[in-house]
Amino acid sequence: MTSLATTLGLRAASAGAFVPNHAAGYLAFNFAWSYLALASRHLKQLWGIDHQSAPRDDIAKYGEAAVRSGKITQSQLNMLKRNEAAYANSVENYTLLVGAIGLATAAGVAPEAINRAGLVYSIARVAYGFWYVLVENDTLALVRALFWYIGNGSCLYLLWKAGELLTKAA
Image 1 (cartoon, helix red, strand yellow):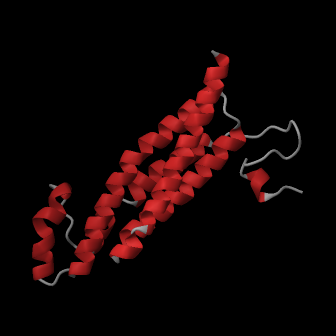
Image 2: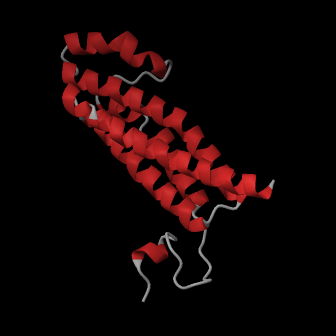
């Protein structure tokens, strides 16, 4: 009987069994999450303040005017600003994941460790994105730092494991 952990490649089915490395899947998922799902264009298009000619200027140039005209609320504008910040952070953070998974894979870190760290990172980054965009309360917003640290911690774990293996090999 195969468990979910075995199917996800988080542990071997039996001693010596092949465990697939799902690094490419985690990279693809997090690319799509960071660059596509968190893109602020979706909300801007939904609320009718997306300008194809200069979409990066939409909020700065048209945001306050859209609130004044009643097209969107101040709360919606604040959400758009948080969405852009979450998007920027996710895009910036993606490079850490790529480096950590790439180095861990090249150094020969066990696939179970790579898969576990990739899954933890993915869950933490999705939670981070949702929390960043949807939570407006300043006190509750502090919780997103926990998700940020968990995600980065999983990458630092992979870098540490790769460093251990590379040091032994030298």
